[in-house]
Image (cartoon, rainbow, N blue to C red):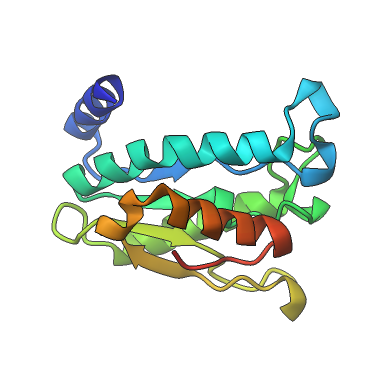
Length: 164
């Protein structure tokens, strides 16, 4: 954690308004087949265990966090590119739209840290795939790994964004 904190400290000296990003889950049907990926449950557990590091740093520096693990639909191949571990052009737009929204609306250094999930706009008018943007203040409830694990597991089940 100290190394990550030092990294964020150094980066914010040059670029003070940064957005932390929690990695997305590979396409579920590719685990564990593609590139020797572990089972989806193992990847989910790794994401759960590393997330507190991001959230603690976000709180300390009052930064926003994009949670791609609860944004990409791990059951929808349209969210993935030529391999199940790359974002597609479509999901690249999700990231760009979220970043643009955060840059325009988040008060860096003043506002409490927030975690963002979901989509700014509906990419194809398909309400069954719609995951509206949510912003949650990172408070003490995020210290409970079980709550994040439950939210991520619900997302893994149906591909929709679930609040913490």
